[in-house]
Image (cartoon, rainbow, N blue to C red; front, top):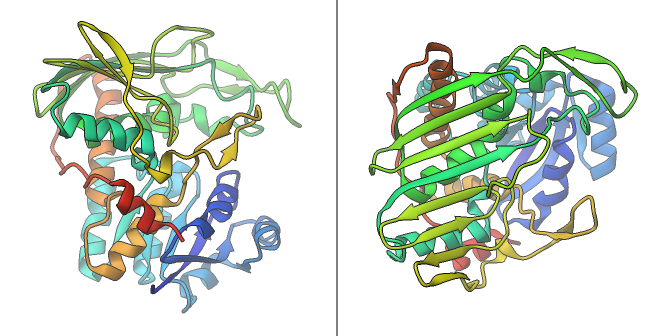
Length: 376
């Protein structure tokens, strides 16, 4: 199989996951990395056997076909634009960009240059979420008419050593965690038609409680509690609660209510988990179907087995480029999700409904056979 060389711009925390997991997949070979900090790029390069480059050097490198943008969210648009201008395909961490206008600008530039753009999250390609997709596509629930999603905790400052950007514009629970939930909803039931929301902040400052900055206060300049209503094009109405002001709760991550049955979907921040189908007669686990992206391949921080196939979306895009087919973590999907998230924040500020200007097709389902073909 042909292979595209991959480079990374941004050598922070998340870069290690990409570099560690990339060898699992066909069609991509991690070759080089760059960062504004030459020391950070050198350290990652030495850790994973890569070539350290300057940003300009990586953009000009002839052996690099795709560049992965792992910079902070506020820099995503500018860096992705530079990648495209350099004639490389671009794949970004979430959130893809911070406005619909930025997404449309990159779409036009990519079209002019005949290049592909993709974006995380790719967790919707995981075994659990593709199993949920199959249950829905087979009509087991009937049409989805409603549902709830909740992602709530007491924030990032207790574990991240430099959490400042989480609490600035471009951060917050909607733009940081919303991509996982909204992307999964779109792949399960289709695009969003309109949103309404209320937003607020639990406190004006946060205190870092780990690492070398332990005890330092940082300002909060973006909403940290959001309650939103999402109306989908298929008629479903989903309540979405996202907060970093909650010490404890009993809400499930995602429940979808159909005309005939309900579907309980695990956390879309992860690839695996148990899918439950509930009817008036009771609930039961949906039998697994041998999807390779549901198989535990690492341990989490507590020693528990976990499925982690980060780079699946990147590998799918690379193989799609080589085969001339659409890729699943598409720019159209990512831009629609960005519009939904920014519309939620705007609706909360204005106390009004916001109708979407964009739409997108559901990404193609990823069967166990399709997933296996992505793996090396």
